[in-house]
Amino acid sequence: MTTDISGIDLAAFIGGLPKCELHLHLEGTLAPDLKLQLAERNGIELEQKTVADVEATYQFDSLASFLAVYYPAMGVLQSAEDFRDLAYAYLTKAAGQGVRYVEMFFDPQAHTGRGVPFDVVIKGYRQGIEKAHAEHGISAELIMCFLRDLSAEFAMATLMESLPYKDWIIGVGLDSDERDNPPSKFAAVFARARKEGYLLTMHCDIDQVGSIDNIRQAVEEIGVDRIDHGTNIVESPELVAEVKRRGLGLTCCPVSNSFVTSDMKATEIVSLLREGVRVTVNSDDPAYFGGYMTENFSALTDKAGLTPAEILRLARNAFEVAWLTPRKRDGYLAELDAYAESFGITA
Ligand code: ADE
Ligand code: ZN
Image: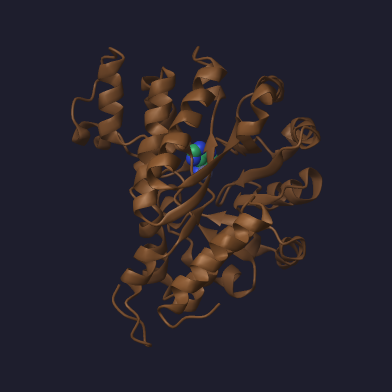
């Protein structure tokens, strides 16, 4: 990436852009070196001894094959300090890339299911958030995801377990393997979560069996406030119109897409952006896919030939669809616009 026709250095523009990340799995930020460190701290004997050994296990070409690597790796996360260190390490990296605010997914069932108590997970993550805020000024909220390949009863029990920590959780999401696990399976859980005051989002992963039906269910039956991925709506003009009518944001993850499908879906993402859908750029599981926020913006810009104004629109979209108070949102947008204006770009 060099300069665009107006002479703007795109890499510099993207590098310094004040960013908002809305699709980030904390467990997906477990970098190989931290994994090795935590294994040692917890006296866990891993087959992999070096960063290269860990990276060599990253063999995936689909959502299911990715998840088969992803869940076993979490075994090194055991104490509140481990969860704290994971969140802190990601937030430190993100702050260094200009991320100002992030809404982060966590998967409590991936931990409670192997005997780590819910409160250990959430207290650790919370400590990491507070430490990163104090040291780097970055702000973050938590979104609790249910694992869709487990039962609705387990999800409901997890929802109940989360209630004492409501002040630390901004919303709920749905992740893991979408195949045969449509949104409707969790309708009662999401209805109860809404009653409890949580905002709602859901993964509608790329090119799934029944993608369009699942997105329709998420929008119309569940009434989500946002959609994670969701780019398959390009196949359905009425769904595009409905997503626009409702003002729903789509949290797209270009680099991740290129690992779990045949390409980063740049054409689809940019065509939705140009149609006025509130598309955003995110990193998903950056330790596994090798791209944090800057790399995702850069990859999409290179592939799709984004203009500086379009890069600004993507960054603005994220702050606009984030679950922020109006006062905080306006503050971030003012900072972003002032930054863009310093490059001669106006919103
Ligand atoms: N868990 C972590 N990353 C995920 C993704 N992209 N889709 C579904 N579940 C996930
Ligand atoms: Zn995801």
